[in-house]
Image (cartoon, rainbow, N blue to C red; front, side, top):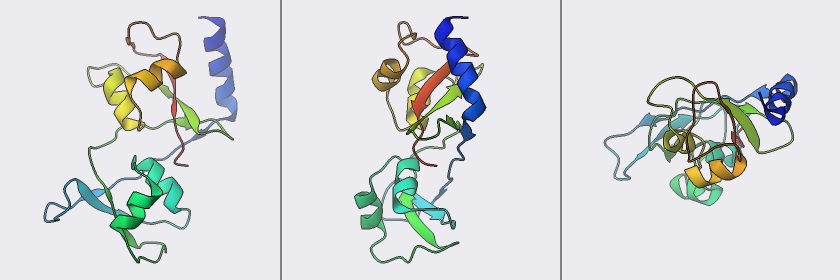
Length: 146
């Protein structure tokens, strides 16, 4: 293992696991690719918007007058199912994700799950060569929703 990977692994001791929010699609909606999310007592416009890869303004436009209360349903962008979570680095908007075995774990799909793209992931992870990832690699990813 390289030195920087050892530092990465050592930093996991102070890392919290982020929990992804899930949306329920609304096929009857006039707004394509939207769904619903049930608010919790820890939610804010900012962290919900970050988790659904949108802006606070867009989220508020989708929900003109909702009270933010626990169990209140709000409309959110619901583009594709996200299957990956990150371990957030306290005090930052980043976290770590460990690549798993399988054809679904490609840099493009990893980027989509973390509201990012392959170029940003490559910038955050200078050890990535030719945009290739392999099982067991630990990647730094955007992780601002918790």
